[in-house]
Image (tube, rainbow, N blue to C red; front, side, top):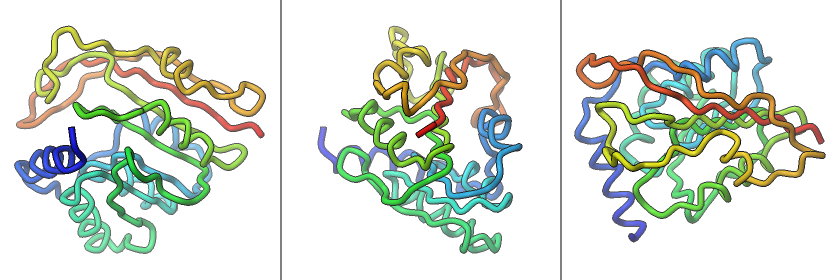
Length: 208
């Protein structure tokens, strides 16, 4: 499908939801990053902006990107209203065509799934190469289908963290896998609905 189709899909999805006033960060981000010293972060697929705002409040300089202009503009508004505009740069990128410039101490890719064609392994490989030595790539994927998910395909395959790592195919002399597991948690969806979900968590550190 075309870039126009993908942009329209994600713009319509976000526009159909009320703008979040205080979006929450993802649980796997907070448990991973709380003890890290702040630096430069890249948030791939920032969505409602909970991760970017949480990082900026802790002193990180965040480049937050999304294919949806609606999501990017809403995050920029939240950053300005919260006095965080100097800590957050919100940009629209279609990762099929462009990747943000810069070097980062942390790259986050939470639930970077799409019904459109995307060479995700290539995107995550670019993310790993954008890390400074000592920097980390945190990839969190759906390991199960939530009741409110846009993807209701019962036959959907959820690649394991090790499968994702194999697909990225990083040189073990320069990157090391620090975490690859599938924890469960209780998630809250639209309208306050809750369900137990599985996260597939991959944490890679650049060592050289």
